[in-house]
Image 1 (spheres, rainbow, N blue to C red):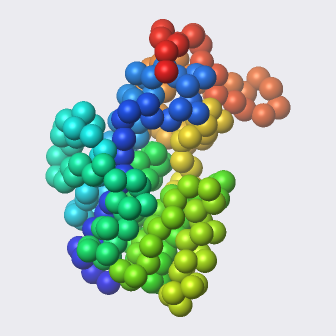
Image 2: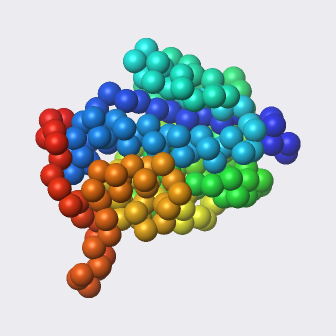
Length: 223
């Protein structure tokens, strides 16, 4: 399949993002990190010159995303599944790329897009779906709560061919404090990595297992 036929869809929100990081990052810092991660994902995609659409739930997020060049910003207030399924139905083939995958690069994405199958799934480390390529408009997504297994079952029910895309960098989604360690270790050169460093994070190897620590406390504990 020619790459230029693929529409890449990135769902994104700024209102109280990444709540599971609220113990180590303030609300403003979580918003800034979310923007940095989106920028890293878009940078990887931009090298492939595909049609890229970022769906946002409100005008505030739309305005924040207008700084990104070469990207379509679409305000869609529907729930995630409804929004994504609408794109699949009307714009197949569609690749859904999560906005919290800062370790992605163009080489990984190119391999993913070239993987054969009606449905190509790149799983997260805890049963989620980080990348999803849908080449059949009858397929419907069901994110949250073990979405990887749900998507496998949905494809099998429709009799569609399935490929599981194996990539460590694609599996690293930044949701919890422990995830920050992978970004600090592997993300050199990424905006999100540099942002964490600027806020005082570093890798502590003084104990048996390395961990991400912060040299100073948050300026703002709200959110």
